[in-house]
Every structure is written in C-alpha cells, then in structure tokens.
Length: 401
Image 1 (cartoon, rainbow, N blue to C red):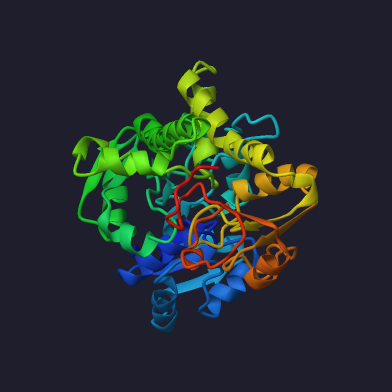
Image 2 (cartoon, one colour):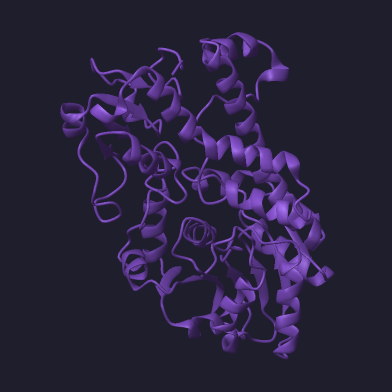
C-alpha cells in the first residue's frame, strides 16, 4: 500500500454480483478493500457479514475479511480518495431503444470524480462499449488528475465467482505500460495467468465472449425448434450426436438464454458494427422468441384460455436468485394474454424481489399445466400428474413441446 493511501482498493458499485465477489477475493488475498455503493441496504448487509444475493462460498470469506479488518463498506463517495486502486463496476447500459449509452460510465463517475487522486489506477471492470475506456481516459485528463486508466473485464459466471476469480486467466489492458503493469500486479494477487491486450482489443474481447455464448445458445434453440416442429426430441438427438464425439461437446441444450449480459452485449456489438451484425440479430430473435414459441406450441395442444398455468422458476439461471432480464417474466406476460390464470414460483427469488410468487406446493395444487422456465435442481425430482413443458429436459422425459 502506498503511504499516500490508507487502502489498497475501493470498488465503486461494489455491492453487486460482480463487484462484491471481487472485493471479497482481493481482501482474502491480502488487500485492504473498501466497497463503495449507493445502496445503504446493501452496505449495511455487507458490514454485517451478509452477502445481499446468492453466491456460493462468498459469505464465509466476507466474514473472515471483516473480522481481519481487510474489508469495509460505505455509501460515502469520499472513500474513493483513500485507495490506490479504484475498480469501477459500472457497465454500459442500453437505453429504451436498445442502443448502448457510452456516456453512462463517464457520467456516473463524474459523481465521485472529486475524489480521484494523482497516483491512482482507475480500473474499468464491467462490460463497456468499445471506446468507453478512451472516454474515461479523456475525462480523467480533463480533471487534471494524473492517474492510469485500465480496462480489465470480469470473466466470472454467477455462482462460480469464488472459484473462477482465482483460476481463470485475467485480461488486463491500459494505454500505458505503467498502467498495464499496475493492473497485472493487482489481479496477479488472484490468478497466476495474465493476458495483456490494448484497451480496444480488451473491450471487444469481452463483447465477443458473451456474444459467442449467446450465439451458441441460439443455435441450440433453433435446432430444438426444427426438431420439435417435426415431433422429434432435440435432447435425444443432442445426446446421440455428442456421445464420445469431441467436436460436438460444446453444443448446449435448449432453454431460455437470458440474464443481464448476453442479450445486452450482443446489442452493443450490433451497434458497434453499425447494425450489420446479422448473426447477432438472428440470435436475438431466436433466443428472445423462445418463450413465445413455447406458448404457441402449447396452444396447439391445449385450450390455454381455460387453464391455469404454473411457471416453475423466475430467475434467469438455475440455482440463482437473480431475475435481471429473465425470460420467465416475458413468458408470464405472454401467458397473461393467453391463459385463464398464471402462477409463478421460485425457491431462490425472495418475496421482497417478487411478491407475486407462491410456494411450489400451492402452484402444483392450483395449476392445470406446468412450464419449467428455470432448471433449478429442486425441480429434478418433481412428482406430478400435471402435463409439464420441459424445454430443458430437466425431468429426463424429453423436450417435445
């Protein structure tokens, strides 16, 4: 730690799914870390040793870091001035027209820019639109602050943060050699393998990563629709073609491809390519259209207007409490126009997040038809006489809908 600063790291936006695991991991590896977040509730929970969301393995490490005095949380922006490394966990959002807003990060940083200090390393961590790193560099220079700026994209999957932060290679980028070296030292406390890129290369690397996953999911979902339209079981076909065949091992199963990153980052890449990214646009149509496809297929077999439909799972991925951009809610909106009634349940999503949800037993008692929207492990042993639409093949009965 520099004698100029009392802390090693401050994480701006550190109360969320990306920032908090990083803060906990850095503290566990010896850094003194301050979590800065505008949510008083999140800050209070963190200081009390509670992770505000589901992240396996994080809470014991948080409590250890708190007990050792290596981590604190605050809503006071002044803490930004106390750390030699400022990690910014604010991503580029898309607006109501689905266009990325590259000014969002500089504008958000402006609210705490009074606390930037000479000698700091400012690290952008969340996905950014290509060129945002350069905008932040200009903003810092215009403030008259002598600080290095780096873009070091997060690469973790939710629920695997406390494993992947320590095992995955870390991409670091900065316009200056000093910035790259400082970023490499910071993240070198977590992982042994550092990959250096230029800022624009790193920005695209992050977008390519998420978009590639999204396109693979779209291919699987399109294959599922093709097979399903002919009354064939895509999951049986997938199991056959992948069996002991290495070149097909990365073909995922069918299912709702959602969450806070994949769709948004594909949109950003489409905008970056001046909307010539036909493959990305096609992937969005397939993945975003899957809930409507499932409902349309069910309409062919059932009179939905006379049925109560139960949706099992409202979070965007299995084992998670995160409902951001979950396609379960799109499914529910469509069904509200089609079915007599729609019920939802989820073992992870709290009443505080969605107070319309019911316990699983209540949904099973009231529903005429079930749709597994999120493949939570709790549903694997589901015993019911009700018809179940199971695109994920969670129950092992095939995926013909």
